[in-house]
Length: 193
Figure (cartoon, rainbow, N blue to C red):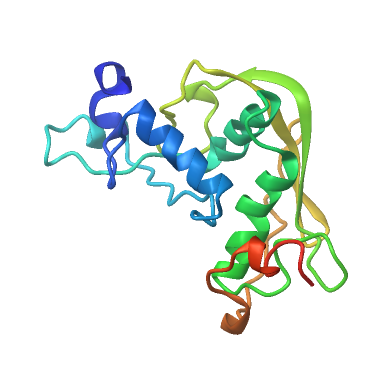
């Protein structure tokens, strides 16, 4: 239904489908068929996206709003906070074999996001920090927002103070032996050691 409103702005590969497909994706997450929620964050400009198909590029900017979109689903009772943490933190670190990431535990980096679950804000194009300055969710009000981002124990962003440009993350290290597909029903996954 969003194609009528957004046109090529939501052109993606694979393409946006029906509400029935959307429901099947949610079920695949719940069934551990889909392991990770992530975004490739394709920051195409509005001018690029306005080109006629097939010249218009596929992809859309999503990383800036992805956590708030999931927190909104948590507030709606569709998912739980532990599921969000698993799908967006632990699972990506495991799938890509990134060491020291994805959990709050001894031996892991202090990478954290603090959220306010009752905070309501409206996504607006002009508030986006990405280089393209637009969002397909422009005008949508969400409940549940990140308010502070901590990387390696240092605050790098806060809703009140903005970005701390001098603080940078570090290059990740990888141990691909810990990555790959797993199924929590097999005792391997976010609750296993």
